[in-house]
Length: 270
Image 1 (cartoon, helix red, strand yellow):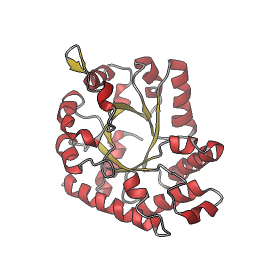
Image 2 (cartoon, rainbow, N blue to C red):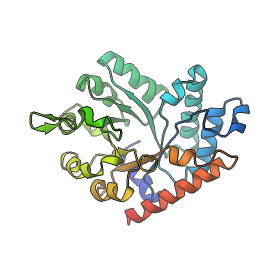
Image 3 (cartoon, helix red, strand yellow):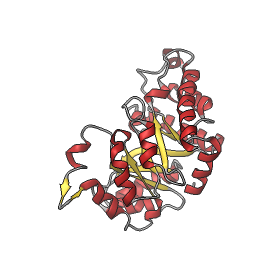
Image 4 (spheres, rainbow, N blue to C red):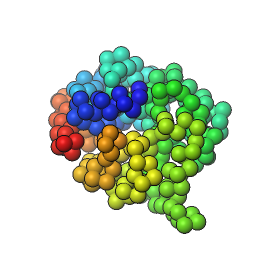
């Protein structure tokens, strides 16, 4: 999927909502545990109830790897369902990979070719030869961790390195990598005051923004400092949507939460 196609979906749906599919069997409605594949059954119901309200889905792969082969199969079924039923929706493998070149190339093959996600999250710590193999895949996107929403982000990301904060150096450096036009970036909503500086470095790139909702991020601040003429934002909510109810009405409750966010986004898009 191209960024132009993604932008068109945002304008059509009046939404830049990304829903995180982070399935914990201890949190899903108990009646689903009787299903042959409770993870996929949960995801399918959430997707069926919310696909018209969002432009992206983001399964965090840890929540699938934790359940071994059954979990991986559920992830495979989920992405196949999305690609067949809703090919217009942008898909993100939140895998946070990144390793030496040959290994990254295999990670890229696994997520962008075999599973056919539109994008994958990647850690930049090992430098360009760990990221460029992901960028080689045509019409796919690499979402680079830049400034994350967790408390530990301040351990490294905002440290001053020869007069420049490390996350800014990552942003500046990444612009020179081969196929850098395929880059997007993770910037946490809990760091809204940093968005203005980030936009000075990457004025047009799409930002994946976690942290709105359960983590306390503010949508209005994110839009004020981070929105571009082509929107340039994918705002993610996971727990706040998918676990809105632990009863049999869980899908409807998720849709209500998603619709509330979508309506707020529609106002911002005006």
